[in-house]
Image (cartoon, rainbow, N blue to C red; front, side):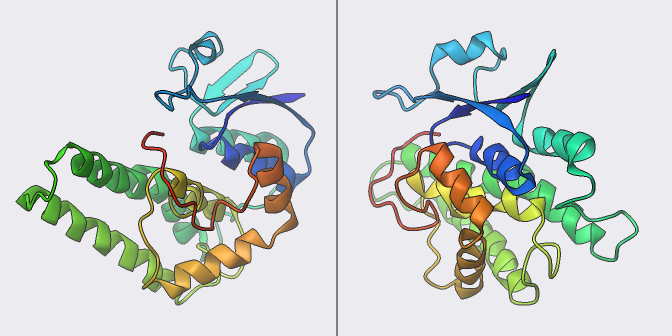
Amino acid sequence: MLTVHHLNVSQSERIIWLLEELELPYELRVYQRDQATQLAPTELRSIHPIGSAPVLCDGEIVMAESGAIIEYILARYGNGRLAVPVTSPQYPDYLYWFHYANGSLMTQISVYWIAGMAAAPESSSPLLSALHERLDRHLQMVEDHLGQATYFAGSEFTVADIMMHFPFGTMKAFYNVGLDSRPNIKAWLARISARAGYQRAMKAAGHEQDPALDWGTTRGAF
């Protein structure tokens, strides 16, 4: 039995979603954020030294990092589902967007967000301006891609979409990148939100509403 250690409102939702899409049995252990700091509880460190989620346990195997966990599950239990074969013309897109989600987009969002919090009120820092312009280029690249493809790897839903959801969906609880001028991203969010596996996963993860919708007040940490 796979065991998912899930921190509420976190990237561990990706793992729950994948398991629901694959209809694989799993045990879910839920942890709540500290009310003052919004950080993970220290008890997660007894599962993995970093003390953050997700963590997947499969027998004696203990894995962290959402991307690595997704690749592990697909390789051992996916039977080719939700992935793109290496021989497919869509494989380069699949591989790129799967890794881009955390490797580039989440990094850029986080750097801009943290720099903004650290800056003085009404700051006109050249660094902030440069970071904003860089983030805008990232968002426009995503918008342009989804103007040409239904999903990130083409016409079929894959785990690249699961990886790309967090920056635009759940991340709104902490920092909303703003999608008023990004209709293609919003349409993609609507498509994936309609999936039965997604809806089961968000319910299991503890959401009272779809995290792709506006949350209002942000929490300030993730």
